[in-house]
Structures are given as structure tokens and as C-alpha cells.
Image 1: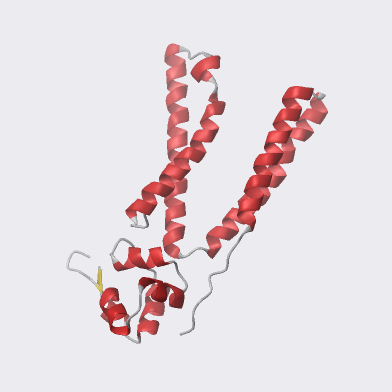
Image 2: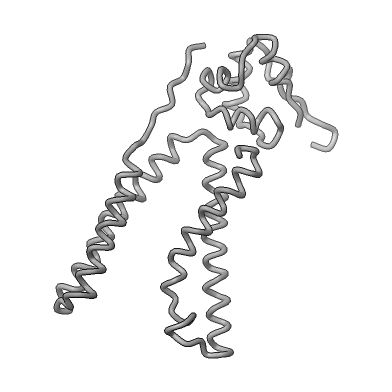
Length: 66
Length: 133
């Protein structure tokens, strides 16, 4: 699974810490998700989509081998 | 969306220290003062109360964590428990083959701190895996 969290953050000029505060997780956890080391739950994915004002599909995309 | 304040549970440190302290005191009392069997049994169960409080605050703390931190805790617990069990089983097998001396490696009490060590090793491995280090 790939994601565009970094791109979306850059658009809003947010740091990982800013995003973490907005969705109530740690900065390290944001880093784990952003680097693709951890796949977030539906609830967390929806929270991210909400703060970015985008759809979940825009932020998270399935890869061919998923 | 507003900033979400993460609730903190500071009780875990308190109960961890309290639990260790009570256990040490009970151990000293039982070993040094040689109480009667009835009193000794009663003293032996005192640390259970504080340890239950510690476990309760630990679980409460896990409930306050985000999902990545929960996964790290879960994997650390699996590492700690599995490696501790493996060590216990290996010494069990070795003991039946070469009859380990109780004063050297045959005493299983040294395995108890190993469970804690393996748990913290698990924390390190999981944090490294999820790029939190």
C-alpha cells in the first residue's frame, strides 16, 4: 500500500508533529504510517482524510501485489 | 479539525515502583525473619495486590496508546513471553540431560528477570521495525 501523506502535508505546510496533534497520535506513529511501515486502521485513515480535506482513496492506494 | 490532546496515565510508574518495593520488602521479611508458615503464606500474597494494580494501570496505559504503539506493545509481549518460555523449556531439557546444578544454572529464578529483559528487547525490535528509533 502506498500513501500520499507526505505530499498532502507539504500542501498544507504541516510537519509530522502537526499532523500527529491533529489526529491524536504520536509523531513517531505518523512517521511509521508515512513510510509505509504500518498500515493504519480505517478509523485513522478516515481521520487523516478528514484533516487533509481529501478522500481516503486519494491518500491511500493499493499496489498490484496487495 | 481541533488538536487532539492525548490523555496521559502517570499511575503506571507509581505502581511499577510500588510493586517492586513491596515485593522486595516481602522477600526480605520472608528470608531474614523466617515467619511462621501461615504468616509466610500471607506475606507471599501481599505483592499480588500491588502487582494486580500495576497490571491494571499497564492495560489502562495501553488503551490510551495509539494503534502503532499498541502493536509495538503486543509484539514486545510476544517476544518477552516466547523467549522466556523458550529459555525455560531449553533449561528443562538440559536439566534432564546433564542434571544442572541448582546453585549454578538449575535455579529457574534467574529466568524471571529474563522475561523483563526479553520484553524490553522486543520493544527495541518493534520500535526499530516501525522506524520509531
